[in-house]
Image (cartoon, rainbow, N blue to C red; front, side, top):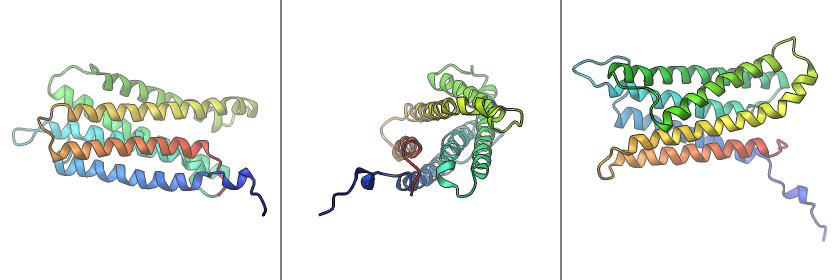
Length: 225
């Protein structure tokens, strides 16, 4: 009876990427249900007939779409996309840029909410993590653009920096996951009892965590499928 080599049982990135896509859809669906159904939607202005909370609700919505979903998809672009390496690089770069745009809107919503209520900014652990993550994210994108897109970059410099770019990208993504989890915890903390909204928020947090794990595993595994 022939003995199969260990390579025959090696797990590749494809099934993990599929799971990651399902989890991304779950994260987006749960976030939209929470924001639209339980939080009453999003508004950029408030008056006596509305509530300032509608302004702040835009913050988790845009941050989850940007720093969690778009970032995860950008990291997996080299596993998902077909075509040349230049096409994959372009998709990777543009998805990160879209993530930064969503994050900028989400940060604006948080600062606007605090400004409208005359409340202090950047007081919680969540805020500290969020600002640090956003700043490192923007810096990582800028450095990556200079090294991998800018025509004047030397090939040896790109080769030397590439492992660090990958490592720092994963670290920043995991920081975004941690920031999202601490942000969701802040919404649950004021609840009295355990309403149905808390279930949705908790499942959203679990989906975000599993999506983060799936993205990292998809990057680690070989792409042969």
